[in-house]
Length: 464
Image 1 (cartoon, rainbow, N blue to C red):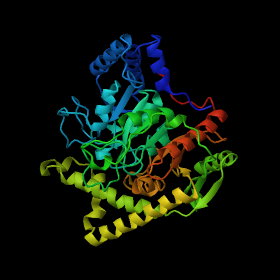
Image 2 (image 1 turned 30 degrees about the vertical axis):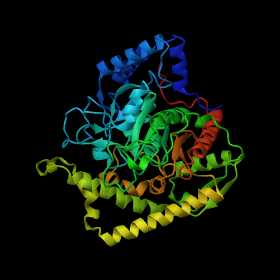
Image 3 (image 1 turned 90 degrees about the horizontal axis):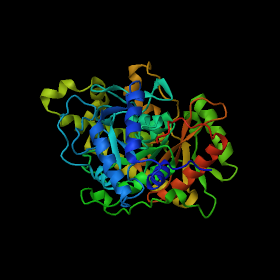
């Protein structure tokens, strides 16, 4: 059986008066005080706002006027997204502590759905890397093994979700930043098709790489959160041709066996522990689904995305007033250094190659297979005592996620425990742009197979 939706369970419990949003809010406030101290998932927790939102939700349930399944559900928000009344510091000493005047479009939709905002979660400075540590807030550790990193850049969101602090964490993903920490922390990370969830304010100079996506403990809850945030918004021109997601995608059964593609040469990227779990996963999945090998330029795609990503980060740094530049972390400055020499010809060549790769991948996913499946990450989470160069060189150790920012298709990471035990890995399932339902169906299939084999491998703390 697939993993139970906590959103559905809590929503039903609220309707039946078995518990209330206020009860859950108090439990979450207490759990944050107990569990966050050693992990550093949160940069801001506002008890007064949490309880105010929970009491409003409790009143709606009492009157039979609940706004939908997310009403009263505790949610966390990455500190790169604006929440009205809270500052957006982006992990940087160069930013202002002034409250944001309005919600980001995605946050406003969650507020309209009645969600209860627990607080803001830790990112790296300006979300620049695949580890979550910054000069303003420090390091976010991995709840599954605090000697390791949580991943990034939505590491605080993934760590909080893994601890049971919030049912859903909202993150951002421009090269894997939802899927990387989800894989490292043993939870689900979902990046919908580009433009499905509007980006507002729109991220300048990031070459149409960023997505907003939820982190949850089940695919069903990730879909519910994404559907609530989805749909066209005038403030994001890229969203205007995208339909809203169906909140029931995770319940839809495929009409035929899902054809799975695996990139050629993939195993050469994997460290031994991941390789063992990956081979175990393939042996289980292949019983019910045909698997074939496809040719995909994994490393080239990563390098193209890496250049565009560095350019976005360089632009963000360029907007910092000169008198505050000394407060920018040296590692970030080193990260953007290579793109100071990029020429217009370089950009034209990279963009042309990006289009060629995206077109080829779309053809594969339209005609040859339904989804691509890879390990989300080729390695286990980095240890906190890893050399500092590992943080700067993070683009070198995550080859599989950037391809789907380059090509704009949906990608979802679900946890998988190998037979040998130990830390879980993430399995990344991706599909052609607009075919989120196909990716979700395959992810739910894998999630169900995993849950049948390891029903006790639930590493989170239940809420409620």
